[in-house]
Length: 175
Image (cartoon, rainbow, N blue to C red):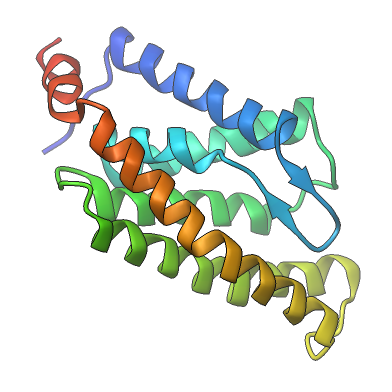
């Protein structure tokens, strides 16, 4: 069954995409090896309202816009693939599901393993010729994971409990 996007849904997605761009490119911290942002918050909201596919598409749009207008590093298609895959993961964990501490933790854990320890090091290796056996690369990622996993888990859980997702989704899908 296809879900159509009307003007109202597109406007909501556009607002969430704009928030993702601002939180990622303007308020995010980025070095050659590491990126820390809070763009996952609007992405979780998008995932609960629109599901995996549209969240993936929205994340790709946010990535392309952010890299076109406010790039802090060179564009690389692998990170755009990460954005789509990240949207799919958030949608899998949160679409039509209650946001619990358990699924918040599992989502952050999956994202951390897939992106911080698998795909991003691969992309950095391809982009910059970095040696994947470089301990500096892995030490930085491990420290980030130890800090980010509990922090993101709690933020997702708190936001998930605070926002009236069911009421928002009902209004969104009744238009």
